[in-house]
Image 1 (tube, helix red, strand yellow):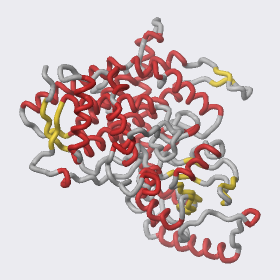
Image 2 (cartoon, one colour):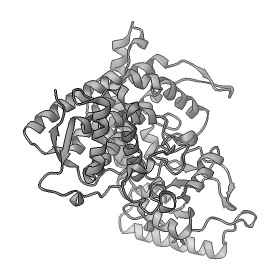
Image 3 (spheres, rainbow, N blue to C red):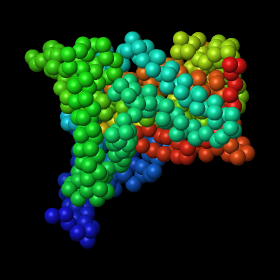
Length: 508
């Protein structure tokens, strides 16, 4: 029976007494006398959780400035390391990548991935995960597959541009956040499911709720014995969302199976048909077992693809346009490049993107200041390891604060907080995980496999919106008035929607 709220403080008090007594009578000793990384002293039970605040990426940067780029924390009962410099990131994501290649178990990840080793993002490291990642990389996210969907992206962007033309003619205020969100969702859902909308299902709403639950702070992940109480109600919400999401995906996959009977599935282009064509095909992973994907894998992969691809692309475009509105000089430079490369009589084609070097710099600068996942997706050590003379135990959670690295004045000079795309002129720094001062997509074995798809969508949409339209802030706002606060979750979207008034630019 669920205990009354009056019983909970008594349980906390008893646990506090036990923890304090244990620490006094049996103090912990580090292996072979080795030192742990420095960090703030933890409180009993909650450790350093009280120090994270509402925007942990900012709080952790402040703590790292005092305790160093490899900082030790106790998140409830979970030992953790926070990495806050490029040099430290190299150690964890490259030199010792195999040690930190797995994910910690969190309560929201299991239902979202339909069980252990079923999806890509949150699955534990091992042969099955390698098989699923390889399958996604080759069959869903390869360069040729991304290029295959170019006509679909062009069609959806064209619809959005026509809608914005009408808004421009009427001098309407456009909710850019909502507009970009709907555009990216339509592109992703058509790629994954073969259609953008289906009024029978609230799949978009369920995916958004699932992503919100995965990104939510769940106390039970850090103080496991509190899980039975479900104090935040997250377990109930997770179970309800998981059941509804699985029911919808079951119906969608079944419909794809029924429409494909007697046909060659390779002729169907959406992700579900591609995955169905690969189902039950064994792959030898050199571990004395053959692995296949089944419907559970397919549903987990679909959840990962839709959830990850939509949120991240939307956030990058939203922040890029925000900074362009705040910096008219940069907006003008980008429009001049587009005018010189594309001309003013047609829209941007994806074949133009490779020639737009200033656009690349604008997007790199956006990802530096607003990385897709400010703390990446956490990793976990699979064995004891010593890094820079510091002993790190097995099962330690590793958090890489790429938001802090991207704003470090020691790395990016004293103007690190400023939006200045020209810092990338004559620079070979890229976002693909080889340059550890810029890691928006992570690095190593757990780097984002969908980076190529995401970057193509972001570049194409942003180029189109800036080329076809001039933008100004509404209601007489000046650039300095624009609210640039963020919310924290798996990503960091704007706290308030971005609003602007478009003016059509092309001579068509």
